[in-house]
Image (cartoon, rainbow, N blue to C red; front, side, top):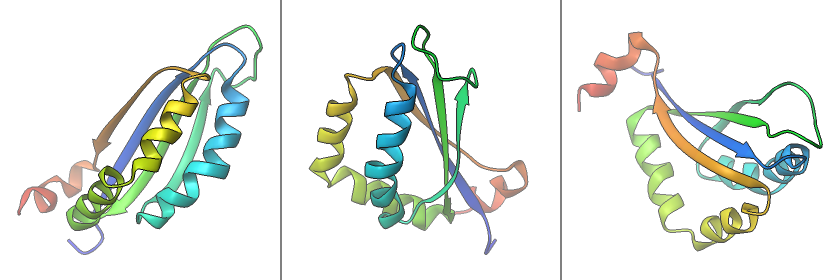
Length: 115
């Protein structure tokens, strides 16, 4: 499939009162590098949908890459970049936990698995 996509989903739980600062810094500092690694930012979701000084927020960031080769290329570039680790370490002051998963549309699974 020429237009198959892999979605990269980052889930970040922020410390109380830190979501807005985290999102602002993510957009300003992380997004340009992500784009440079071939990722396309799809959306950033914040739950609950309110900036609160007293509660945590879950920030869900969805990126896409075009197919398996782009995913591997993005992954290799990220693993070789020591600045990414330093950036995430700096974000520890705002973040309580984070995870990354990959997903695809069900209709794309056969094409993605045919390697």
